[in-house]
Length: 133
Image (cartoon, rainbow, N blue to C red; front, side, top):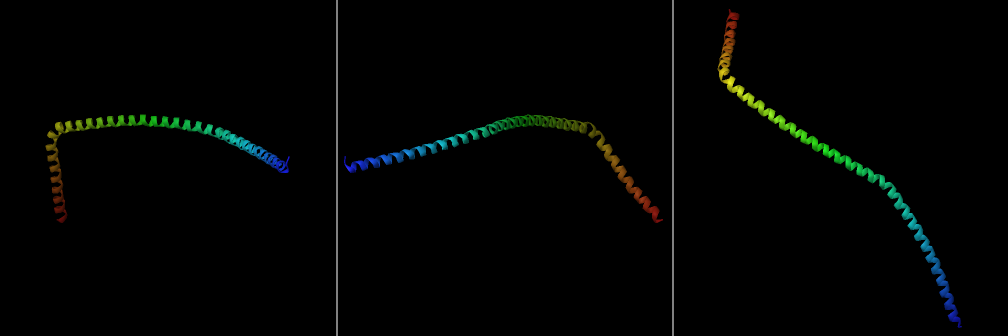
């Protein structure tokens, strides 16, 4: 064989060995990275699982609170309706009392108020006259 052919074969063998070593190193590094990634994913799953459960529980509690608020709103609305009805009943009763009593007593009360005012005025005149004498 020729010296050039032997040298070429030696160079090819050395390059093959270097590539094989480089591929083994790269494969080991990829393996380590995959193991680290798997550990990271496992730790994230372990940490996220309780967090997700807490989020689900919080959502359930919020749902119950919203339902309670809805029920309370309905009760308050019902109470306001009843209060409005009671106010209308009081207003109607007041109107009836005014119709029945007002037409009879207003003139008498007006006359009584006039007599009272007149008495005050007369008493004022009388006491001033007495004080000046």
